[in-house]
Length: 249
Image (cartoon, rainbow, N blue to C red; front, side, top):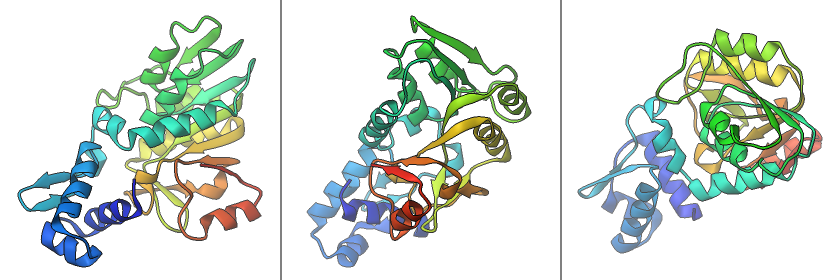
């Protein structure tokens, strides 16, 4: 995603619908260029386009898994590949919810002797036919829209185990590195997972940069490694490196 397109997306998500001629004036480009940008963002499922204007998705917390799966798809695939390179044979892994984590699960097939604990049905499905993986799945009430198990059921599941590495994602991140999610149940499950892992890895794609959601979910500095598809905004990278947090992008 070009910097201008990212700026357009941030503007629309923070200030709401924007006429195309207003975007032309703000970014100093032609109407044809703005239309190309908006078409590109809409094709990725990042916003809606309507006659002469662009709009944010209504109720971002209700965007389905299928919609989120196409948001910044190339970036999520890059993140999954970078994370796969950090994992090795004979590890115990915990995988959280989200489409990027599910992509990672699809890349674990060549690992030997792994044990995976997850509350993500998409990840579990990808690992069901793994020839050398012991798969443990959280039981309880399934959130049908996202096909995962969250809340108290996931909390109790993760608290029963220990893992070498835990991999999670979040709903949003602001410019100060604060993390957000859309409900307490998601946070509860993720916190339980992270608390049981020796190495904590956060996957966050650039479509979640400079955003907020309803629930505060920690900070980037809570993790040992942060993997993104683009460099973190502002001075975040320097600040995190000073805290010995490994960054990959």
